[in-house]
Length: 468
Image (cartoon, rainbow, N blue to C red; front, side, top):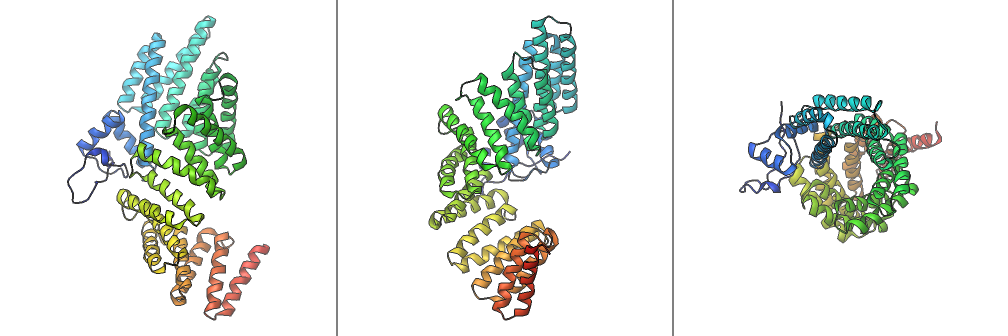
């Protein structure tokens, strides 16, 4: 089986740096030394690590997200083990099944572990039918815990829909006298459904969990904040910003009060609320939140992590939108540097950084600095994404507009034509970006005296707008 290489070298041509200077990017090759270090860092048996690496490839997790995703998978594995060890201690009658499930987990025998946990759950459900009330409650909680462990197992395998179904089964098994346990399973169910894009079902689970926790717990409980955070994220994903904002704000306030100013969960709340404001064009509100979240991410992930590069890029974009160009430029450059170093010179996110920096230089009238960046971005996108990709059309359009701004109409015209052709083919003849290309092309054609062709373009724009 193929085994992945998690790491990049700190500097080419230099003495090998400590392994903690590496970042997970592309699962292709792994030295024994690197494998041992990673197993130790993540507290994973070798078989589990190698299985997770293969899952990252099978699920086609992007290189930008592989490091974060593997950390989440490892954390989930640790939670499953803790849950099963507690379950074994609480209910010795199922100890043999749980012991076998733990052995299967350590050997990455996922189907066997899942089967054993289902067997343990079924045994407890059957025993509960004839047990006294107190024992019935214990048996049902034990069965629910086994089902929830299978939910965690499937979540660690990135099988989120199946994970959500197991958490649903767990929630249904919980006796009415244990509402907070049920709420925890409902949150996990809702999160899994959200990751699958099953938003209405996710909303039902998360809303019910929030109602339970608000009824049973103090308003400044971290469990309440967790529900608020996931529900706000769900609304944000659907563009329901007015509903998402107050939930984000409440979750952020609780986490800041209870966890302090440097906790990773606080950074998640800060960045999510900043993204919400960013999406709405409320840049002055987004800026301080991005600024607060960035140093927490740098401390938690390291200063050269892909997610740190994304945070830098987001903050730079907010600065640029507010015409704070001097503040934006060094952040764009820093983000580009990290992405080139960690992801390699031909990664699509490198192309994104190049394009963002070029846009800034174009805005500042620094055309000679913008042009090579636009051209590099275009070359990367053509090579990696293919000549017919919409992002290639974006690069063609941006470079054409730069040439047009410089009066280089002969260089701009073929790029406008190519961009329009790609967008029409991929997006359809009535897409807003096709309309934008038609208008840009018409303006350029007018400048070079090809007025009849320009009028044809504008007539197409009018026809699209009129729905004819």
